[in-house]
Length: 91
Image 1 (cartoon, rainbow, N blue to C red):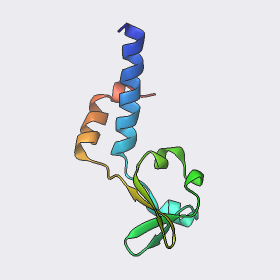
Image 2 (cartoon, rainbow, N blue to C red; image 1 turned 180 degrees about the vertical axis):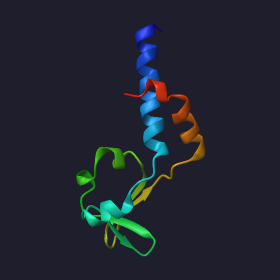
Image 3 (cartoon, rainbow, N blue to C red; image 1 turned 90 degrees about the vertical axis):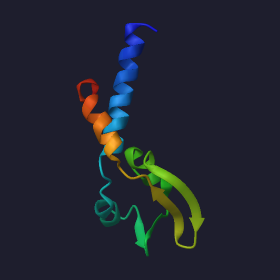
């Protein structure tokens, strides 16, 4: 593995760790009309309309009575720590 490949891998890990360590602004998505909250669950009518960084945070998708039910991954302390360690390599 050469230096260029290592640099690309570091950048990818740094960017993904940073993205997964940030909380999702669900209120903004609801106010923009991209998702709706029914009970404790979140639904969308068009999964492809969601921003790319939000789509990457979806852990499960299923068809529901109110549209497409989506479950998000939560940010973790381990990802925040990893993001902090790799912050020099972020784009």
